[in-house]
Amino acid sequence: MAEKQGKKSSAPNRKDQPVSTTNKATITKTSAADEEDAVCVKCDKVVSAQDYAICCEICESWFHIACQKISRPVYDYMVVEESGKQLHWNCSFCKHGYENMHRNLKRLEKQQEDITRKQEVIVAELCETKETVREKMEQVDTMENRVNTLEAKNLGVTDYIKQDETIKLSLITRVSELEAKFTGVESGHVGMDKQNTTSMKINQQQAQEQVETVIGEVYRRNTRVNNLVVHGVPEERSGTEEQGNEICMKYIQRIMEVCGVRDSSEKIEKVLRLGKTQQDKDRPLLV
Image 1: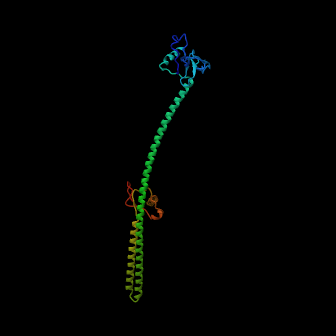
Image 2: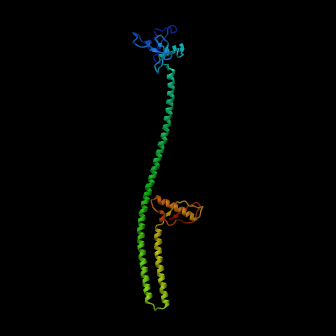
Image 3: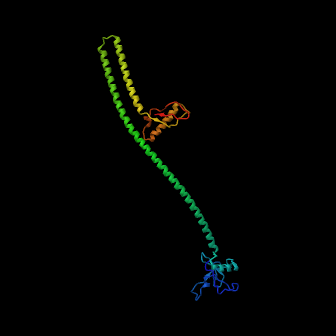
């Protein structure tokens, strides 16, 4: 309630003389130009220094106490307490606006709390996502290192296979030479008896079988160099062994594709389980 105190010296008995709460009551008016008369917002009448009127502290508008239905005792009490600034008065319009503002502030505070909580959740999710991305990047780096190692081993195996191919061609050449020699021996000894000829043929056949055995052993040894033993592949126990091997083949092909090996289906001849079947343990897989 703004400037509600009137002239105390001129109001010893408030029942006989009105006490004004207007600013005009504390101002000595020397002319009409000193201050224009305030107007009651409710009745649209001039509020003079002798009227019982009250001013809203927010909008600073004036009202007659009768227009606001304020009793005289209440008004007198408000005037007395005004010296200590103990009481405040606002018009109904400002009071309603203040209540709306208070509700809006409460709503804004709640919205701010909700936004803060959501922001904390988002920050936590971002931190978790960042950690997941970091782990994935580490896995990718590890996979790249493994791929590089496999490529280096593959180059060594390729060189070894080329050497074995050279040995194989050399053996085939030697076999051809031996066959030519045996053919010459047969043609040079036409007059020999059938027993000697049969013995020579047997020796020739045995020599050829030995050479083929050596070639086969070299080939199997080269093939074993390319074999892989994979652990941890789930074993299918419900179907047949062929069905289980087919599932394992697809599983290994996916692993090879992740490692960057192209056309893995053409490079994998077969897959099979090693050892006896166990109910609680998956057997290693030979690729």
